[in-house]
Image (tube, rainbow, N blue to C red; front, side, top):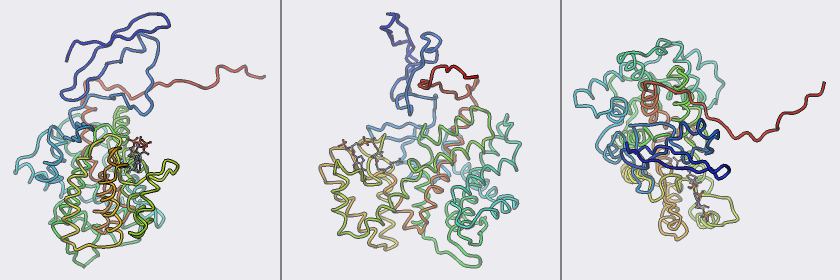
Length: 426
Ligand code: ACO
């Protein structure tokens, strides 16, 4: 850490204050303003935390300008291409990639724990038909804390391990059950002979006594989507998880809060919007009309799946998914009007001056939407897929905060703009 400081002068009373600058191992430094209120009597104001680091973390690094994303120092493209989702989950949760032996043991442990208590089915039975799978999943994860209430007191490594393995293992089962229940379909139990991602696809698509022919490329595509979503530093849902962790809430209650945040259209719902928009455009001959609408300053229409708040040159996750999308379409021989519409939009956006000038290229949601559609996963399940991928990241962030020597409860302040004290009328 450097001993550099930043000096702030208040021109109202000409007083100066000094605050230390803390250096990151890579990326922007931060100004430590934890004593700001004590020293100046003022709060800082940063709606949406656009300039505020809310914690110190060793998990994920993003450089939006350079299109860089790393989990524990490993580039996302390496993890997505060379490793599996469970390798990545292990990396996030144990700080290092597993050896072949450790991975085998971890896979076995996750498979073994993938069953949920039969009592959960009574809860699922009580939801109305067509209930949204995200609502069912969130309730199911919350309900898990009633079966494992001991996880409230996690003070040793083994207990933490058990809590973490349980949730990583059971989320896909609850996710698949959520879909089956919301559509009145028979549930399919986990299969001990299948790997993590194959098992989930099977629970989603199979029927009792029938065989689903899953191609390796389908499993690889979904596994890659899970890996690419595994963590993304202090986004809205992770911040929700950390806020709950700071109150010492049950870890599964914190995950349920993360699911609630992720359900929002501005967060986990973007890839569903991509497919809805492609369906709305409908045919290739209407693409030019919608490109013109997207470019029209007086029209609020935006091309879904283009642009990103953080990645301003390219989204490294989209680069990986574009390759997988191409492979998948070729191997499955998929050609449809929707795919043709998507291809035309992609081609125009990558060559049109309007999009190039503003750094608007296809983002992760554009490709993940198309891949999930090709995998026959219904749109209402897209955010659920995101949850499965993000769970190891949430647990890693929960654990990082919980292991701190002192945990400060998340409690932001405000700029009060309401009425001053009113005179009561008696
Ligand atoms: N289509 C057309 N024009 C766009 C689009 C788009 N998708 N996105 C941005 N623009 C234009 C804006 O009109 C603006 O133009 P101007 O400079 O002439 O006024 C310029 O590009 C910059 O736009 P901002 O809104 O300032 O960019 P910001 O970084 O704030 O927004 C965002 C990023 C919200 C992702 C935006 O690009 C968008 O709405 N995209 C579509 C929705 C989407 O795909 N969301 C998923 C993002 S990925 C994720 O969250 C995991």
